[in-house]
Length: 399
Image (cartoon, rainbow, N blue to C red; front, side, top):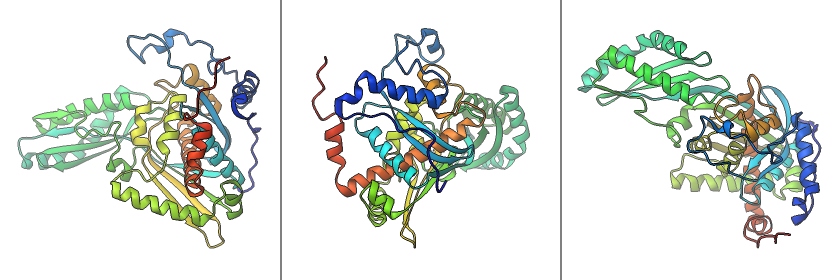
């Protein structure tokens, strides 16, 4: 995409409070409807039938209203080809969408990002408890022979998921079994949990375990070093090569500025002991997850990863973001109704293979946001931007 050009128009904008007047809101919505290839009545405020909440919430009373803004176009080469998309963010954090929009402008000027899912597999970690370590060791050595039986169990529970791997590990007198599932375009958590419970029961009977626990080593919705190193869900990477002149024009920084601050952040992150080497991944992921009907609690896992900047011999900047545990889906859960379906259609990912493209778009979005934010720290514009665009200023009076 070295010389890519967006096939989407710039978003209509106005200065200050005028940007929220109906004329500009309607113009942006029309641009999004053109991009999605369909009307977007729910985003425009049309009520969602209460029955669409069935199976997703209990004691239903209504719908949360969170403002949705779009940034872009984001230009990225995905596994489905070159894409130019408006990215929806549901958020109440002023200045955030503007920061991502600036980062996406940078990626466009550089010719677009490149992103790929480089690994698949939803892992679950049931635990078997034995009387002693000797029994646990014997079970660990015997369990791999049960793979085909366990795969058959999974095949009997779902048409879309399958068991990819079964790896037992000894922990004292316990055996943790890492199960890896293929889930298609769904996150697949409910399917995997059901299959894991059945597999753990089968393995406990075969090995004589005293107890079994479906979530014996529970990684669900918590950042963890295992997922960071081995991947969980969709292991995704995005990168871009940015000419120094483009950086100076759009972000007012040099490649050396960004390399220095990213390395300084890495030192700070090491002192914190965090598993997250990205800068603001949780910001963008949470907002897009909310807009697109994803399980927002999975941001705790999904927002972990690595950021890497390097000055190249010709003076360009190479920037990459690696997110090893993106948990997203374009079917199932809350993805099929209301504003979620409309936002996924805006991204063009409600199709076979769409979950991979969603992950790739997200990785490029994270990269855009981190570039923009780190540049604002270099130029000391961060606080001013929040004063100007964020929630610090007085509320605009109601008419």
